[in-house]
Image (cartoon, rainbow, N blue to C red; front, side, top):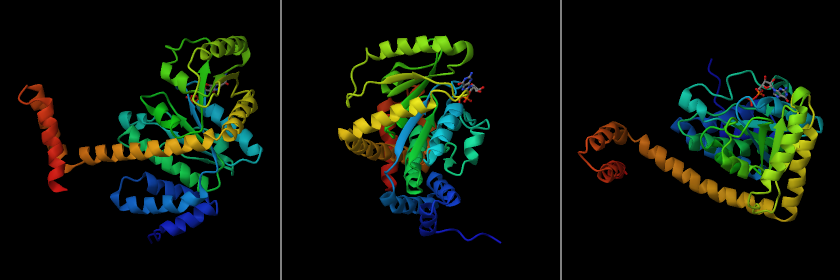
Length: 330
Ligand code: GDP
């Protein structure tokens, strides 16, 4: 017997009752690429909005192997032990490119998954970073409506995913290792500039000394960056996700930041700016996907690319021809 499909109202009622199953199902609808779900997703988000917005949103990035999932597990456990409700979402556009996600392949956060006050959702899949990021952003709203007061968004240094995550969080955390150069760690300069805090992870055993040295170096390096809009000076600290040290200290940085940014009204201002940004991003992303998924465009794009390659047509003419295809039907 097929289960009756839950309505948007059913799902929202479940979310507000803090039912994880309802939250999961609602996120699945938000993530769905099936056009049949688009309206339902919009209805769910709209009904959740009045309950949302009360969380702290933290982005965490760092190259594969730096210890993101171990760190998030330690941080998550610490937070739930202080009575917080923690949701962990991920933006991992690599899954759509390579068909195997960098973040999702291993068994991750085994302890935190079992915690009743934690909700962990692997990355949405999609054919573009914009699409994946938008779905994550919408899922944040559902998690907030579900009573999660701390939202952690994890991402990996692939392409532009950091920029996308930075634009949906209040605080952006970069995990690094001591001793390896930036090139080795694949850290792009722009990412250092986005960070509100740098945490040198794996500060344990033989690594402890090097981590402390790195802390001094990064603190000095950060002073060379232009001051941030909100006058926050990025902080550097050391941690060991495995030995569970420096976790509380890391969180205290976030809390200090939150207190300062709420006092100066930067918090509100920043969220409004982020909403405006997401309005434009969403338009951008939907126009693109509308174009590239258009039947006639799909059929003709390859031909036009070849024609350009063979110098039979200029790129501008080809572009105009393709863009006109979608006008004809609408
Ligand atoms: P991710 O790819 O960034 O999510 O990294 P993982 O959390 O999967 O960790 C990668 C490896 O580093 C695993 O073998 C972890 O056990 C190890 N690791 C993570 N955190 C620490 C730490 O604080 N100290 C040490 N020594 N190892 C760690």
